Length: 329
Image (cartoon, rainbow, N blue to C red; front, side):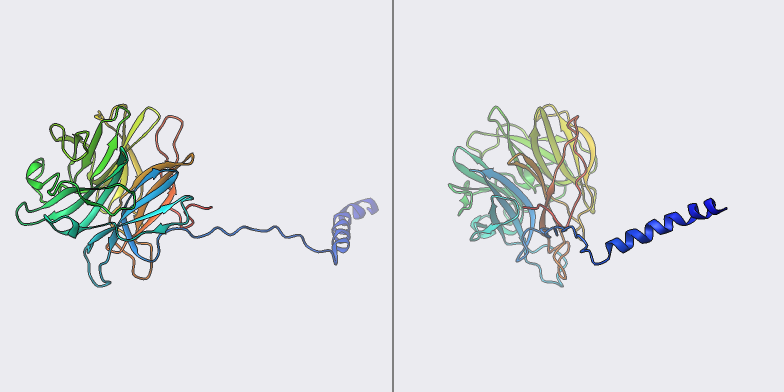
């Protein structure tokens, strides 16, 4: 019995002894690094419909500019904005580089747009409302010698008007232009709402080169974006409404395209979802918008955010995880 008693109390004795030996000893604390809250990336104005390019080791971010009053439940957009960064966290703003008023044939709506560089010139493809001579949404193109502008109308007229596209009879199917230059130098313009259109561009980047074609994609709403990684082409787009982002893959810029699934869920507090995808300094980024600035953010007062984009070994894309922290320095 005595041995049994000693066995029973020994753990308690050791525990007490350890506690006594630890009295008055400082407790070591491990420092926890607090992550910065970097989404949205622009917080002094509302920004939407992002596009981005990398030029001279700098990222240039192009956005729409929501100016709708708090009690106004539709889009009010009159110009586009540009920002630059060398670390994806700190962004420099510039004077307004382009406005609807710069297109004399347009009357409203600085909707989604994209910039691309070719031969030292920067071409900005935009969505606007055409004047009453060709009613409906239209696509224009502006040009500049600098990625930050100022830009001016390169054609003096629209590149795409509503009467040129007949796959659907809506008047807003000619929006959300996206341009991709393939490895052989051939440029392609993608755009659309409810129907995804595409066409080749001539070398001057301001004329179509051939017929307008369509791509059959599940639940295509709008916002096509083309990028390439390795041997794979990716076509991401806004899916259903409220919008998620889905994507398809192909071995050729002209398809066939194989649908792969959802890439990004409904963007918080915004019924639209509009993406840009770039690679910068060895990492891949997914740029999008949410209604994240509170108390007044929402579907018509949006804000651009950035998170990492990751690939699987077979080339498919991992679902984007939207975060408040965003990209850390």
